[in-house]
Length: 367
Image (cartoon, rainbow, N blue to C red; front, top):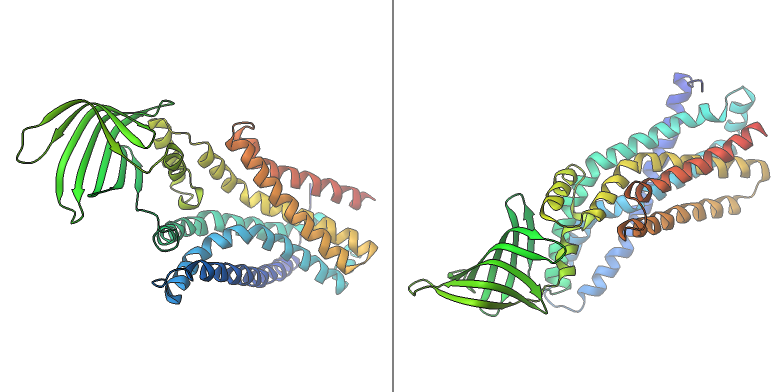
């Protein structure tokens, strides 16, 4: 059993690491946000109607998502800096010589990392999802200049709004049959450019093929005219199956608390929820990933305290952070492509990093 550190030591190490984490987070988010703002300004320079205030607003809406991205690096670098700071001031030497084990002085730092992870998942992630959804709309409207297609999925069925030559159309289907992408009990409402209703089309089934919605046994109702039946009708669209699938699986737009119910809705209507399931498991694993970053930081700090060399200390820490980052992305891609189970895809980075860190610390402690 690992002895719990004294209250004074716990508070001191927690405060030192917490302040370092806060400072490094501000520095990293400032650097990343500055480069991202420059990129947005470059893209906005093509359009005269996109001014600097709008670009600043877009960058502000994107900030929480950037914080989510840099959080693991901030945790790792703050851990590296904290242990380097303690080592430089000979505090680590004093702690070790007084009988404090590596596990005892790691406990406060790991506790702070776990707490930060929980706060990010439960508070920052929902805020990030809400902000990024708005940013995505602004980006498509002003920078990508895409036509406004809106796709939504509810318990009541599938809804889609797409632009047409004469205005826009709203499509509704009660259910979707996969993998053929056959929509059942379809209703399409047509509106002109002034949002005035023009006509309605009903069909027992429809499919998206070659840039058209193909409706079987369609019935067209135009106000003031008798309804017309057709064995087959075609509605042009600029949407593809990939566009629709991607709109349902964009993790950045779904908050932690909304994910479980939305995943259930996707499964009930036949859509592939793998990407969102992986994202949900990654959020659950995030506090433990942060803890593993502390173990890796402690490994680097303890080895370098024995061998010396500040440059190699920094270099090894940066390399460790990027290895974990790229490993996470690689395993996520394997999970999305169904080549790796969802649990392993999401939890492997945290588990492997922890195993490596703890193994090295055990060898250093016993050695």
